[in-house]
Image 1 (tube, rainbow, N blue to C red):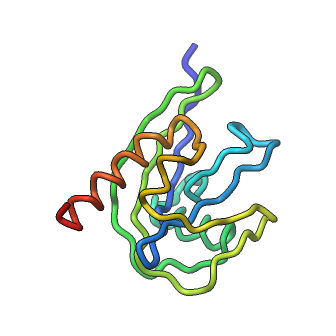
Image 2 (tube, one colour; image 1 turned 90 degrees about the vertical axis):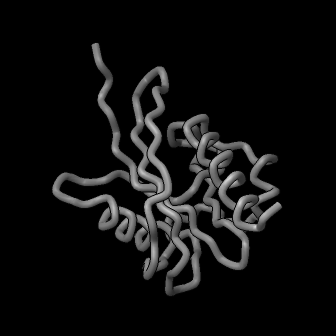
Length: 137
């Protein structure tokens, strides 16, 4: 039996060399862990449309600039997720948890010390590689 693949648009939201994270509700799959905001891509929606809609609904921002960053498929025992990750470097609005979820800004270096869902680990590694190259270190 193949499990359903859930297509998710994920935003790595950048501001002042920091990244915005949201805490998953304890009722959710992988609850109590920090994640990059985003959500399911609905039928008939492009990934960018889903990203803009989800970030507006979840963290009250409107994306003005984003670029495709990476794609990951991760199989959990109960479901498979296909993550389309975008770097969001431009937005309007001040992020806050519209669904009551805590948000926090962290530096790229701090990402290593945060408890993420398993599917997010490769994203963290890729962000760290990407930004260490940019800073020429």
